[in-house]
Image (cartoon, rainbow over all chains, first blue to last red; front, top):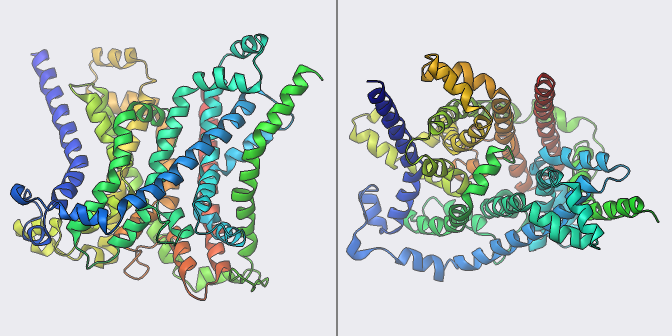
Amino acid sequence: MKRLKQKISRTIIFLLLLFLAISNLYPLVFMFINSLKTHTEYLKNPFSLPNFQHLAWENYQTMISQFKIFNLFKNTFIISTFTIIFILLFGIIASYAFSKLKFLGSDVIYFLIISSMFVPVQVTIIPIYMLFSKLHLVNTYWSVILTYLGMFLSEAILLLTAAFRGIPDELIEAAELDGAGYVDVIRYVIVPMGRPAIILCIIYYFIVTWNDLFTPMILIQDMNLRTVMVALAALISRYSGDPTFQFAGLVLAAIPAILVYALFQRYIIKGIGAGATR
Amino acid sequence: MSWRHIKSIQGILSVIPVLFIMIFIRFYPILAAIYRSFTDWDGLYRNNWVGLKNYIDIFTNSPFWTLLRNNAVLLISVPLQIVLGLFVAVLLYEEVAGWQFFRTIVYVPQIISAVIIGYLFRIAFGLDGPINLVLRKLSLDFLAIEWLGHSASALFVLVLCLTWFSIGWQAIVILGGMSKISPDVIEAATVDGANFWQRTFYIIVPMISRTLEYGVIMSMVWTFTGIFAFIYSITYGGPGYETSTIDYMIYTKFYQASANYGFACGLAVILLIIILILTIAEMRFTNKVSEWE
């Protein structure tokens, strides 16, 4: 009797989770299905499956050949990659210093950097824009990369410093007795030991920068340098547009982040669960 | 030169790049925004001290109170997220067949760009969109309204969207908090005859109160600062200013011709103060709990 009751309750839980999973995935499926229809098919019934004899691949062809979506991918990819490289480069050495190389005032500097974490980018964007336009950085990848560094470095340092604090000092001392210098310690002790936090940074900031709209929209107006999300936001803002064509672009733009998540989701789940970021 | 001396020089040199970026991309712009909020700055040459004029304008002669109302309405999403997120976390905690797969899927909305999610919601709630089609099929024509055309229903769609987007985040955070509870505690309660609801509300919730507080505050901060792309792709802040928020207005002001950036900076300072209050509340919570532990 008790076992039966337990079995029923577990089945109910399973069904509830299944319902939730469907509610999370259905919008994506809806978008994909309709991206393979023509506009008239979509207007007739948005819920039907596409006509498998005549899938409307031309939506994707136009996205690629006329909207040049892969050129936009390249722009976002460059910005994301350099943002991540600099976050890691500067973030790792600074976090190493904050966790292992105490110096006079290091706690104050650490506090200053971390306390700026919650300041939203909207507060700083107008002065940043004016500063960059004086330096001729507006409409360059650098404007967005630098703004991202300002936004994300404090968060990354919080995460990396916490991770590096857990590395035993004895390991570093042993390496130094073997003649390891500053760079060797970082390369052979800090980075390998802090690997999970570093991987979390890479994945998390890839997804965040890939999906972001606000910063690149303000700082890059040049049509050839725009990021994917900025270009798509401009495309979908035309109410008259053909939704099936727009769906095709959105499907393509969603793929990189989904792919990265699918490959590395356990790091993200663990990091978010530990209260790493929002 | 002593070993310790070398180490502290290495330490100082290590933080210089970060400090440099922080000064130019964070601290300077924050101070500049505060200073400019007291001027009639147009971004170029006009830059006269006007005292509190921008703030008086904001409070008396601008849609500010509508913006603040919208921010407040959107905060309704936070308790919804927490309750639903807790529910999902408790379901996942039971570790039924396939729970790891479900855990992965629960977080999926967070991976999708707000531009994409926003567009899907805009399409879904369009006048002839899927939602209205279904409502008409069910002969509920009176519900098949122009959702995004009226302030109350448009805000409802935004709350729905933010909640749908955030349940997974809350669930994963809460699950992280629950993983620190010893399984023995929950098992002991089960043996003593506590049912599912009793276990949830008398054992799990009190033990993860710190996590819940973190989830509430972070989500509130996020609702004030992180939802620009949702508003942009669902309603453009309209009709009128009926779904604009404070941060959205900063963007609108940025693009307006005859820009008064001093005014926009004033809004930025107000936003900063709101965030500061929330952050201090979060830190107070943290201290209280760590004392208790």
